[in-house]
Length: 246
Image (cartoon, rainbow, N blue to C red; front, side):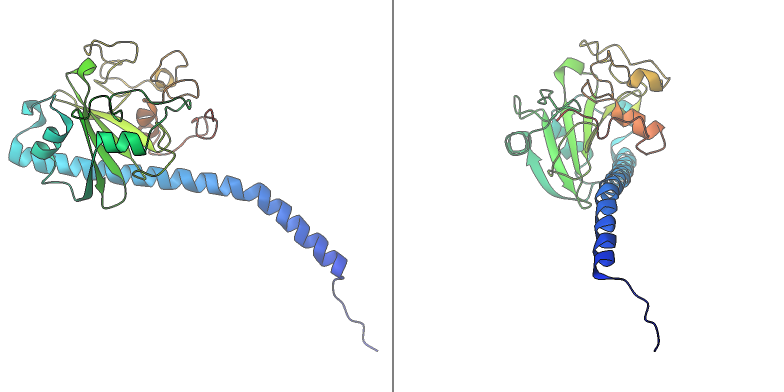
């Protein structure tokens, strides 16, 4: 009589249980890493789309050095970008702010000018074909620049600065720069004349726990844009991705 080799029912159940436990431990990590990769790919693509639109606009409207900055968001979009960006929908700041409110990286309520409803004429938002949202904003407290926002997944959550929403500035002298990059405003100033650190980039500075724009779990996260770009369009190990306040 031949011997038959196989697993008992108990052994099968134990094995399945182990696989289930391991899966529960591993899947969140895989999901988190996938989200990071997708976020950066979408940000990079939307940034390239924006840069291409700027180049085409410069061909017809002259170099950025001669653009009218600042200008109300919709007027700025209509004059310099509307004919050079492929988009599906335009959204007013009032509609966006009421239906899809935003938070800072530290989890607190967003109170800045770019996405707030306190002055609907200052900002304007468009959804690109790839699902991202581009925002054009004039902040009167920094009236030498336009603030440009990229929300990589449009109106979808989490709508949090430094997580799916990344901020840039557009100036006559420096062109399009990530907040925290050359020629962008220092979060300790409100008069619009002091730059972050001139032409240099300083990684430790943009993660400084004592600066309100800094990219860390205690602050607003505005400078996370400069951090990810200068880290090669990736979320590094010390990036405050999953450690933000709930």
